[in-house]
Structure formats: structure tokens, C-alpha cells
Amino acid sequence: MPGAEALAKTGIEAMVLSYKDGLALIIGTSGMVGLGIMVYRAPNGSWTPTR
Image (cartoon, rainbow, N blue to C red; front, side, top):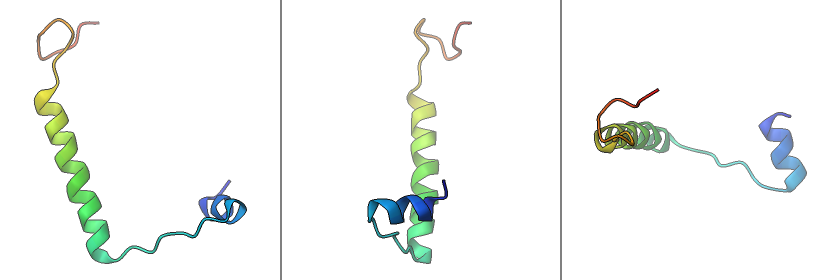
């Protein structure tokens, strides 16, 4: 089901983002992925997970 159709069925209005909002989403996502990689530790304490 397309997103616009799902929003219409639930009565939720779609958000309209400006260029600043899109840029903030991109920068924030990249930053959080980088932070997650820096703090990731495998259960055995090494940087590479065991298989």
C-alpha cells in the first residue's frame, strides 16, 4: 500500500519537509551510524562478531 494511501486511511496528514529538514536527517543518520560503529563490541569482547 502506498504511503499516501495509508496516511489517508488513518487520517494522518503528511509532513512537508524543507531542504533544511532533509539535510538534518541525513547528517543525523550518518552521525548515529558512526557512533554506533565506534561503540559496538561483539559478545566476546572483540571488534569482530563470532559466527
